[in-house]
Structures are given as C-alpha cells and as structure tokens.
Image (cartoon, rainbow, N blue to C red; front, side, top):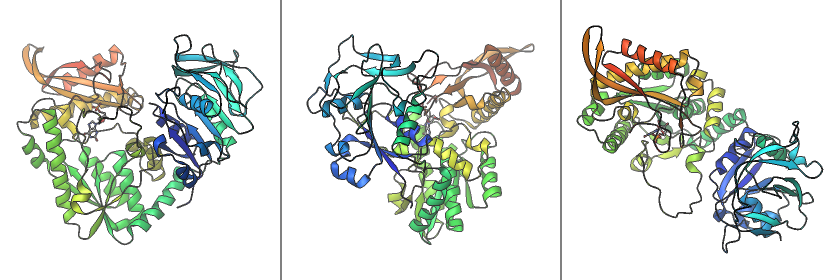
Length: 521
Ligand code: XMP
C-alpha cells in the first residue's frame, strides 16, 4: 500500500482530540491519534511523522509526573503544534514557565484573540474581518507565565497573554485555545496553514483509498472466501461493496432479517444490493425465531442480549453453509479502535449492551477483514459515494442493531410493531416533505406501553400513545432535541392519528442526551 504522508497527534486526554484528526482528514491529510504513553522515541522514529500535534488534556504540567511527549518530538526537525495543555507542555519542556490555575487567569468558553506582531504563516487568513480579531474557544485553568527561549507572541486574548506563540526558527507553534472546535470558526484555516507549511500535499483522498484498499484486500484474502454481515447501514454496506469490488464472487453477504426492521426496509436493502451490485446475498428471513424468543420480554437489557445472541446464532448457521469461508468482514471504524487516554483508570459503566457480532470470529475460527478501520464516519460516506452508493442511501439516519425492539418499550407484539412501522413511516415522510431530513441526525417513533382514551367522530377510542423523537448530534454521544415548529408537530400528529389505526395520542420527546439517551431503551 502506498505510504502516505503522516501526521502524528499525541493525545494527552482531551475530550476533543478526535476533532483534530477530523479537521486534518478533511484537509486530505492522513493522521493517527496515539496516547502519549505509547509514544516513545522508538515509536516516533518508526512512525516518521511529517508533523506532530500535541493535543489538549485535563492534567496540569505543574504536577510532577504529568504527561509528556518523548524528547525526540523536539529534535526530529518537523513542525510541532501544541494545543492548550499541548502548549503548556511545550513551554515547560523547552524552558518556559506554566503556573497552576488561579481564578483570574482561568478561561472557559468564548474569547477573542487579537494579533500582536507581524503576520504569522499559520495565521494566513486570520484577523481579516473589520474588527481584526478572531473568536476562539478557551478551556484552561493553568496558564503560561513565561515563554520558552526562542518563542514570541503573535496573538493575545484578555485572559491569555500568550494565546498564540511560535518559535519560527524551529517551526514550533503553540496556542492556548482549541482551533479544532466549532466555536473557533476560523480554526480549520489554522490547521490548513500548518499542514501546508509542513509540506503535506493532501494525498489522502477516498478515490486513492478505494484503489489501495482493493489491492490490500486482494493481498490479504488471496483466493479464500469471505462472509459479511450486512445490516443495510452505511458501514456494513460500504464494507460489502468494497469487498465485492475487490474479490467478486468470493464474498457472500448475509442479511439477517429479525422482523424488527422498518416498513419495507428488508425489501429495499435486498433489492438495492441484488439489482445494483449483483453480489451473493443471503436474505435470512428469521422473524419468527426472533419474535418468538422476545415474547413476554420487557426488560431492555434482556431484549438486547436475546437479539444479540440470536443474531450470532443465525449468522453462524448461514455462514456454516458457505464452504471454506476463512474471513469475516466487519465495518469497524477508526473511532472504535482509537485507544483512549483514561485518567479514571476504571472501566466505564455499561449504559446499554450494543449489538454486534463480537466474539464470532474466534468462535468460528475466522480471520477479520476490516477495510474501514482507518476511516471516520464522514470518510466512509465519501467512500460510499465513490463506490456509487445512492446519496439517499448514504445519507440515511443511523438505525440500531436491535431495531424496533428498543423503540417499543415494554413487551413486543406483532400488533404493536405493525402500528409502530406505519407511524414511523408517516413521521419520516413528514420530515422529508418539509425538507428537514438532512438537518436531523436521527428521527423515529417509539410506541409507548400505554393506552389512552380519545374521541374520534362520535366514538370513544382507547388506543396506544406514541412519542416522536428527533435529535441533532455529531456522533451520537451527545444530542439535542430538534426544535420543530408547533405547526409541523401539529400537522404530523394529525396525520399519524388519521392514518395509523391504533394510535390516538402523539407526544414529542424534548429530552437531550445526556441526561436522556437517543433511543428509548
Ligand atoms: P443511545 O440510545 O445510546 O444511542 O443514545 C446512540 C446511537 O447508537 C444507536 N444505537 C445502537 N446502534 N446497536 C447499534 O448498532 C445498538 O445496540 C444500538 N443501541 C443504540 C442509536 O440508534 C443512536 O444512533
């Protein structure tokens, strides 16, 4: 595989380190995030970065034993950019001074930086507005009180006299704010200037990735057979199509239909793949098995575990029929494999058991093919586009593995699922008609385990209540409810009640995440 120009991000534990990587990938620059503990002198030599970025982090450089990069980060001769904690690390390591937080120097949130010296190359395009200042996002308790020798100040804010600093002779840059976040509107420009200065040519594109990955898959798989669980979601679809391009008939995809899909979804997915890609596809119609096992189950975790286990059993049953399969393809993404810097030390609490085919490769003696391991979600979409997947398919809202089971709190019945499917279809139709689909990260209906009294015509009704959910989010980790107009909500409620027999009351869920979760279970 072609060796791309590489940038190394040394992670000191900031919540937003991934955003740095995403900003860089948007600039067609290949970068990797590695926790500071793993970055040794030997690692750096082997990695051979063309530039290095030090992330922010929650520690204080004034504390003995606080996280540091290896010394060779400063002697490799490549440009280095330090952000927030990364700036403080640089100052402390190179002979400056950092003082622990005091209330008058701590800064959290929006601040404005103004230039103090002549133009700095990485600030090309900054301070162009009428007020000659830039909005930036600060989040620091400690502050730099003395610059390291060789550094000068190029920008200040009211709380950070050393907001932008640089040692031009060594191409070291250090900023106190976070250029990677949305609230530093011109931050991407700073990264762009930095990578240009470091000599990156933008050789990381999805067109090139497609060709390279196809060659890599062929090399890994040889003439062996591969199976792939297709869910109809973007990740598994792109995985399947990429493999199909690489190895054609050696691939078989298994689409497990657990009877918990949305209206017409199974047919749509199967048709799309059979008609457009002519790949070996097994449509495993197993709804009786899944719905049978879920009968009488109302606990959310039991539901998830039941579905997860059955999914593996079913997948294995079909996979066993494919003689000589040696590989399992999975749509694992880069955020799933980035090792995070943990300061708490303990394992995080399981909020929900996620559904995947974990454990299956070992159980079946299969080797893994994970062609998306290096990609962020937006890159997977771009790759899907390269591979000719329809835009409407690529842009679909995420759908959880356990499907409608977790949108039907309480016991699941076929009757409730039918009602839920119809209501969901009307809701999504409304969202599309109003041109809101792409603005919303995820939208769906949950059918509630409660019947309420209503009046329609001259008669009394006693039917289910449902909740509409719509959220905006970047990655599903946090979310806010979508602010529909009352008009939209009213119109949608009327349509659902008129068009869906079995529902006589519609509510709108206005919980953000946290404290809520996106799904109801
Ligand atoms: P929550 O409800 O945890 O959901 O806020 C966050 C995102 O994850 C999706 N989700 C799942 N996806 N398997 C999946 O593949 C699951 O078991 C699962 N549970 C939740 C959810 O739809 C949302 O996009």
